[in-house]
Image 1 (spheres, rainbow, N blue to C red):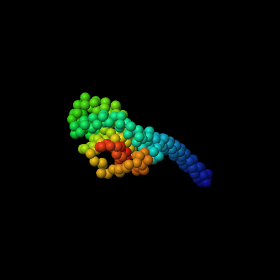
Image 2 (image 1 turned 30 degrees about the horizontal axis):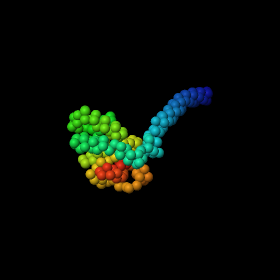
Image 3 (image 1 turned 90 degrees about the horizontal axis):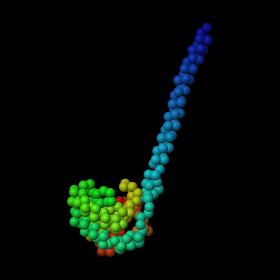
Length: 201
């Protein structure tokens, strides 16, 4: 009499346990699929960033060659020197690009909107696509930039009284120089106070 009852109880418990485990297995399977989909989406989303940072840390189109930049300098030297003269007068100006300025308010930089427009007009005519960066005694002309702000490079002209103390000065073509992926400034003299520069800092 106890045997069938015990067997029936065990069968019921077994059925109950089986039914309790089945939804768990389904949830586990669904969770695994969801996790796989999340990982796939993450891989697809991060692929362009990985390409930029790992395979090609600077990304985008190649910088202009030294020869192209020297030709550009000769075409537009007068405009470039006009920008230098303006920048030396505007001692609070730090950075000026086609779409932003530092300080953010032109009045804080000590320049009027009309003067900002004059800068941008000259830079556009001189084919300096990414504006200028101004130091105490130098003006950087960012003709070309590549990659991300945290891992990129810039190439263009540098007007300075003295070469940057941290720069590597070369006489060969910058395009053929072995340059560290990050953290190096390479300069090549053009004439006078003018240099070509490749900055990966």
